Length: 529
Image (tube, rainbow, N blue to C red; front, side, top):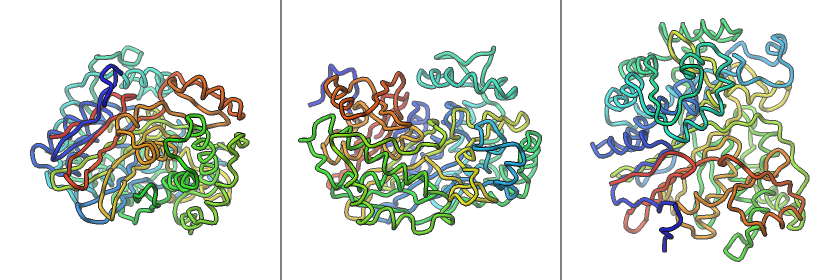
C-alpha cells in the first residue's frame, strides 16, 4: 500500500489517454490537446513547444530531438532529429581557429545545425492530426505574454546565470535586472513566439530557409562560425526515420534509438546486469555496486566507439553480442570497484523528456535538448533563437569515430526509451540528466522489472551514478550501504542537487489502464483522463 505519510505522490492512473512531462504547463497543454481529440504526436508537439518557452535553459527550437513512436499494434520506429556539423567543419579547420583538445560550450563551433524543428515537422507531417497553429497556441501565448518561473527551473536558471552572462544578447533576455528570475516571476520571449507562429504557418521552411536562416547564419559567422545558408537549407529535411535497436530484459524488449545516440550504452548495461540476479535478494550496496561497475564498462566503450552511424559500422551487433557481454560481465568483482574508466566527454545535464499515450493506443517517447544549460549561450538578437552546444561532444582527434567532420552528427546523450511486450508497446519512458541517461534507463527498468516497484516509487528512489572516478550518491542511500561501498573502493560524492529526472507511462495489456509517473526532482506531473 502507498505510504501517504511519505511526502511523495502516487503514480497517476487513467483509462484512456495520458501525458507525462517535467513541467506543469507542458503537461497541461498536452492533456488539453488529448482531451480535444488530438493524438500522441499532437500532444507531444504542443507540450515541447511550451517547454521551449517556459524552461529555456533546458530546451529550445535551436536544439536537437529524438523520438520513438509506436502506433497501436505496430512496430516501434525511431526518429533521428539531431543536427549535423557545417560542411566546412574539420578537425584541421577548428585547430587552425585556435582550438586544441576540445570544443568549448560557448564556441560557435559547438553549434551544429539544429535538428529539432526538422524533427517536429517530420513527426507532424507523418503522424499529426491537428494543425500546428492550434498546437503552438499556448506556447505562443506564454512566449508573448509571459509565464511564471517554476521552482526547479528557477534553481537551474540561477545555477547557470554566470555562463549565460557571457553573451550580451542572452544576458539581456535571460537575466532581467542582471540576475536570474525568482520563483513566480513572470518572463517572456516574444521573438520566440514570432518564430513559432512562422513555423506553424510555413513548417520547417520558416526556420531553415529565407530571412531567418540568413540571419542565424550571419550571427554565427560573426562569432567565428563556419556555418552557411546552404548548411541550413540542407538541414530542413535532415530528420529521418530509422530502425531502433533493442535487447531483451526481464521478459520485455527494450527499444532505443541507434547511434549516434547513447541508447546502445543503456542496452549494454542491461545486458551486463542480466548476467546477475538483480532480484529482491540483492542488498542495497550490491545493487548500487553492480550498476556502477556495469555503467563504467558500458560508458568506456561508448566514449571510444559510438558516433555518427557512418563512422561506427557494426558497433551495435558487436557490443550486444553474447561474447562481448559475457567478457565484460566477468570483469566485475563484487568485492572491489574497478579502476575508473576513462571519462573525457563534456558533462551535460540539460534536456527535457516527455511521453504520451493517446486514446487510440499510440505511444510516443520524445526528447528535446540544447545540451548544456542555455546551450551554447549564443542568442541571435534578431531571430531570438538560442543555439544549442551539441557540437561540444565532437572530438578533435583525427581518426576517432567521433571526430568532427563535414555534415557529421556527433555522439548524443539524449535517448528516449520504449518497453514492449510480445511486439506491443508497454511503456514509453525516459530519463533526463545528460551523462546519466543511459545509466538511468537501466536503473529505472531494473527497479520496475527486477524489483516490481511502482513507477513513481522507482523514479523517486535514491539514485547513484559512477562518473568521473567517483560514485555520485543522492541523499537517502543508507549509511550502512555507503560504508559498504566505501570499503569496496568507491569514492563517494554525496550530491547536493538531484541526479536527472524521468517520466513514464505503463500500458496494462489486459485492461488498457494507463499508469503514469513524473519525477519529483522536477516541476512536472503526469495527467490523464
